[in-house]
Length: 145
Length: 145
Image (cartoon, rainbow over all chains, first blue to last red; front, side, top):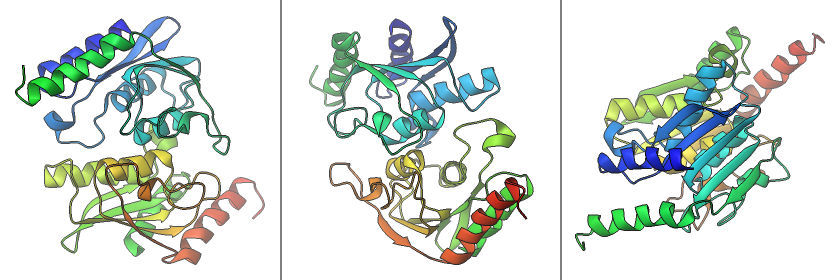
């Protein structure tokens, strides 16, 4: 998760909402991503999608078997859907997203019985650090710090 | 929808599951995509995501305001999430997806009250053609035609 936080810090340095993700396979990081929505003007440029694409390029496979995805914030519906599509077996996230979280908060797309893949989910890892990055970012954005 | 079907035919020619999408803005097509998952070995290479990325590049914006997305098959959770993320106001789809459809069949991510964007959805446009492309494809795949 420290590596996902390092990715989030890269987003923060670009004045992007600080969210980062890494994909791990065989104890090595094969995909990294941080939120780049404003920089790239791309609605798909979420940390998870960037990391998944990189991991998929690395493995030359659309199925990311035996991989873990670490992400600082609970995945949104798009990213949760991408995790299901790429058949990632385990997701570890830092802090919950009360507005769009789809890995247990608003709903749980990662463990939906009717989909053809279900994901093991671990939450709250380095929660305090993942959360405070976001609250500090938005506080600065509102000019209150 | 005929243009989305034309995209699906391109996927079919590559032995990909025939699904196609276009994004329309001001009566012109600014994004096109067809399923390329097997060709590119990319779990994100669904028709809708490819068309959304192209439209976003064209408009130089992550918000696809005043756009319509036409797609031959009901969007999966990832694509439905991407539609919400890109703030597309209207989605028109051909045929329902009983296995993964998230625009009304298994659930409706496009009209979820708790998300920050809701989408106008029209279904069943050229349903027969969109559906028969898929059934014929899978029939050929099973060697029964």
